[in-house]
Image: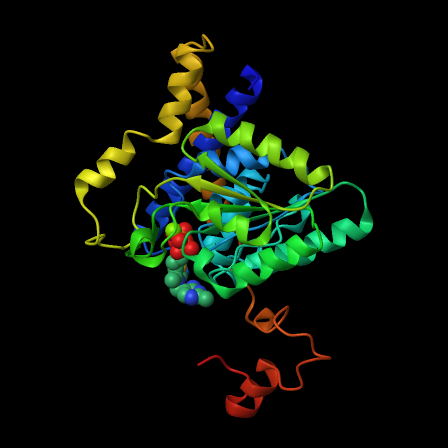
Length: 338
Ligand SMILES: Cc1ncc(C[n+]2csc(CCOP(=O)(O)OP(=O)(O)O)c2C)c(N)n1
Ligand SMILES: [Mg+2]
């Protein structure tokens, strides 16, 4: 991995970490409008994977999607605006943290439905195969999602049609409070690739170099038309399932042992020890990202609240939905919100 790419990855991982530190502060202040699930500890995955993608390549994301969204190039102020329920947010404040989509960067959207993004990615990959321009789709999802029917159906279809899709399973060991050892009986989730005659890969998701190199191979494979790949990224979520989780299902020792494998610390050590980068350079990157995040948060706070008249916009296609909320509210109490 070239020094420039690694330095950019270090910057991007810090951007994600700082964004979420600020998101937690906003949640503590009760300013966020919906649940906030942080990605802390998993940043190397989104960054190492998206480093190989252009805006014409698509991703589908999860309820833990800030990292995917930022690594794909989203604007931080519009993301904060979405968390704060502002009209200028990515989904005009109607989606919150779990539903940010940004088509300008090829992000087909976060998804509150566990496993919901996986078949969407297969559909997107089918369109790319038909377009034949060499683009591909990545679907991020968790270990919990790998036990959903949608995962198996999507992998099967992608496999029979050799679709250009890379399934990136973020195995952070838990589905809320359930440890993987209680929910599946395979050593590696990537072993499930075999059932679909698909290439499977096990990757250290806390090691940016490992993620970057493995993704490079997966992209080459998919672009050669050899069919889909299932990548399992072994990782750990360093914070609770969501902001407010008391985490009584795991021990402090376990969490601390993984904090020692923090992907950002590991990347920093790599740059210092193997790439000869000065500590000052790394400190400067962290500082710049912290300031950019603070600025974006302040800008978002000043953005306007959504208008009540827009409440029912973008929710239903009027052609398809004969009874909209507008008609319901009008009939019920003269169009006023209750
Ligand atoms: C279809 C569906 N089932 C259950 C839930 C409730 N739920 C939200 S997050 C979650 C855990 C998902 O675990 P995993 O896929 O490992 O992702 P992680 O939270 O660890 O990133 C569950 C069960 C949901 N949102 N959607
Ligand atoms: Mg999980």
